[in-house]
Image 1 (cartoon, rainbow, N blue to C red):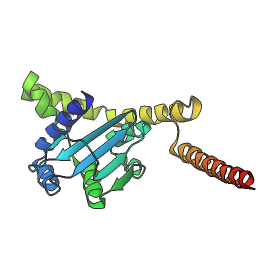
Image 2 (cartoon, one colour):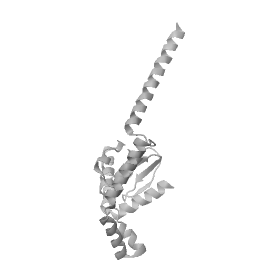
Image 3 (tube, rainbow, N blue to C red):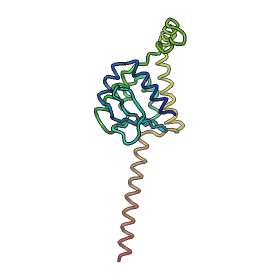
Image 4 (tube, helix red, strand yellow):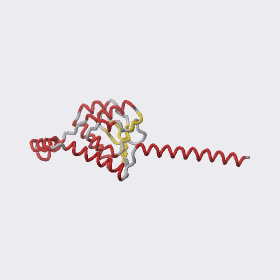
Length: 186
């Protein structure tokens, strides 16, 4: 359900930006997986550049911590460097380029419901009240609260450290098992 809605939304924005469809069509048949805990969305690039449902192995995978989403929505450049990617480097590069440059034409969509003039005025008013900087500040504060003061979301550095500790424990258990096996043989 969520993946269908996400794909429909992404395809809508892609169609508003025809140049993006042309760029993606070069990767026709490739599969991309986007992981934003707890969701994972896999899609195959169709010949016309739109995205369709996919299953199986992904050619490229982007892992985005949920705390990064508000910053990415505001096109905060340092946030893009925190996205983890694996797989086809050219495809990953294209996905990141599109995520930086795609623009949703809110006025166009709103105009279908309330008319062109009213839609343009609403969008201009929203832009003029510096919604972006206020939203960005709120997003940063929320992210800091969820990772620092009330740690509900783990920081990537803590996850890496935890993973390393698990690896060390696994290796120690394997050494102990080998030692026990040698002692039993003697």
